[in-house]
Length: 115
Image 1: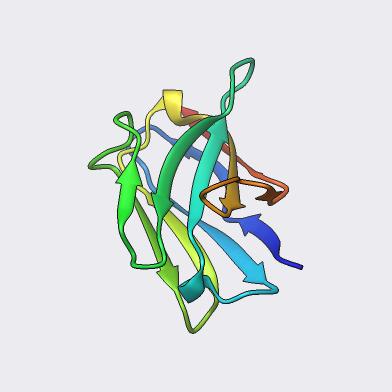
Image 2: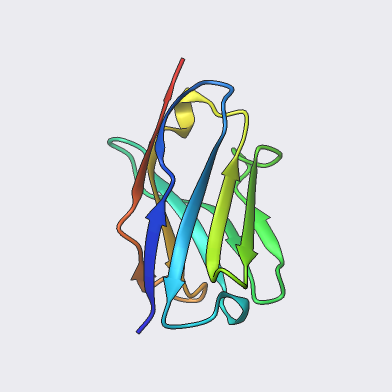
């Protein structure tokens, strides 16, 4: 059974950076298609970034050029590097898998950006 555990959230000022981690157990990230999602307060959950087994990446337009998704096969961990953060990036962030069904989710980590 695949399990996902996010960490790395916190509160930072606009313009700052955070790196989210998603520790994966039950499978190897190198063989997995994974994604990051977020749910802002009072809004629907939205896809932020995905990374395939071939390390092909996609990004939401709102985060392109600011966020970077990556995997570390040795640590079996998914990352989301978030730079130039904006108040509108405030949300609970989740990692999920697999890309064709998104049926396994982590518990989420809160990110709060102040202006």
